[in-house]
Image 1 (spheres, rainbow, N blue to C red):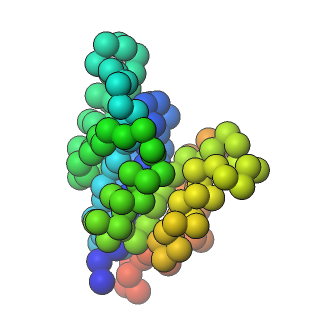
Image 2 (image 1 turned 45 degrees about the horizontal axis):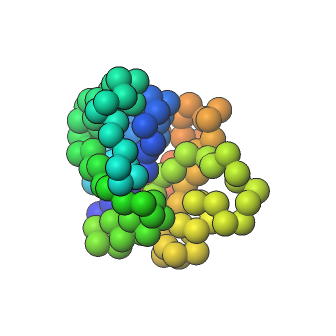
Length: 145
């Protein structure tokens, strides 16, 4: 079965590293890559030059990685990500590390509880490249890292 990788991004250019990680996993596993951003209802990022520029930049990075960038409108980020992941049969979710990582009700913990059959990879800001040891599980038997 083909792996389906979903990268969850915010409106920050630093999310590029998450997209690149997703591309690396998709390339090595011959999987499909999707990039998703959930915008709060009423948020107008087009009126904010910095946020609009960041999303435009991430759109281009997604396109270069062979993925579409889907922007969904919702006031409930977790519900929306869970629904998208389930409707699209995602097997891997990549998210950035939450500032409140110790809080048992942060977005990562909520996603893990609600998507028990989906591998959730949390990338910290210091991570520039996905661990080659962990990446080996996505490489076909004849592949190399």
